[in-house]
Length: 253
Image (cartoon, rainbow, N blue to C red):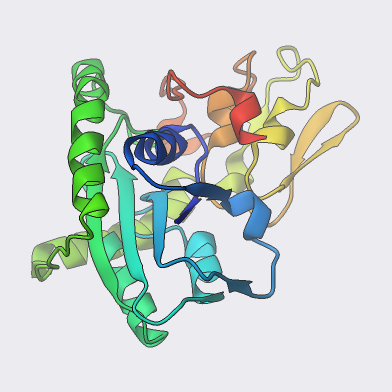
């Protein structure tokens, strides 16, 4: 089995690692960072999973682009886990449709509530989600181990409209990389922001980060900066930093 994952602040990596431990089979974890530039991705595994965060109520577009480059065996058991801040939006429906266009079928899909790294999650809710995380992962692992199928209920019109609005507004007003900047007196030029960026979008110049044009809106740079020197502007200017307690920067680099 292969599990392809995208993780910035560690939620999805923690989920992928926990799932691999729970499953009584040979599991290989493959990061988005390692496949994003490949022209084609072919797998002979009979079971393939995708674990990723929800960005703007949908699948991160760069991760979806990688999935569209994949070739699967016929009748491969495909499953997905979307880590989200309480609302998966149209994520799983989008992924299912993309796979159907390739002649593949998303057999099972799950959403997993985790502390948010964009919109703020109240501390009590974050603690509750982290406490419930092992039990929820064990439940998902049992279903995957038995190759169970899940259904995809239709998305209510209200939720579809809300998700569309989030996709339209979010990149411009909530997480806009043009507003990212460093506090000169706080930045020590350590380069950690560049190392944890899954899209290799940050260039260190004169001991300061410079954002290129391939930002995937993951906020890894903001949350992992050890000096909290990176500010993202806009509606999230004052939000606290977060990363999964069981994930370190070296796990992502």
